[in-house]
Image (tube, rainbow, N blue to C red; front, side):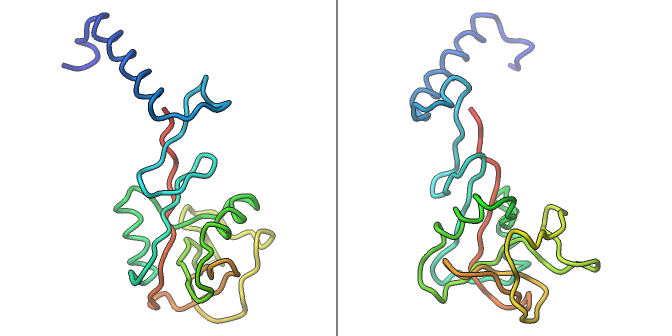
Length: 162
C-alpha cells in the first residue's frame, strides 16, 4: 500500500509513530521544534554534515578512497568554511603521522573539490610538494601527494533531518 491508498487513520498512526521515533532519537535542543539531524552509527556529526574518519591499517589510494565514500552514499571531505575546517582538524587528531585523503585534487584548470567547486586558498594553504591529490595530516596541515599512495580517508555526507 502506498500513501495515495492510505486511509486518514493510517496516516495519523504513521505520524504518531514518526513523532515517537523522533522523541527517542532526537536530543532536546533548539532544533527540537523543527526536528533534528542524525548520522549513521559511528559517524561524527557537525552542523548539517556527517563524517566518517577511517582509522587503523585500512589504507587506500585516492581513487579507492573516493569509491569507498561513494559506496556509503558520501564523498571525500569537502571543506566549505573555517568552522568546518577546525572541526575536522580537532576530530582527526591522533598520531602525528596519520594522514587522510580529502576530496581536493588537481584538475586540468587548477585545484578542484570532488563536488566541482574550485579550491579557495583562503581556507588553508597546500604544501609545495608534488602530487595531484591532497591529504590532511592528523591535527596538522595539508599536503599534496601522488594519488596512488595509500592513506586513510575522510568521508562526508549530509545528515538525515527528521
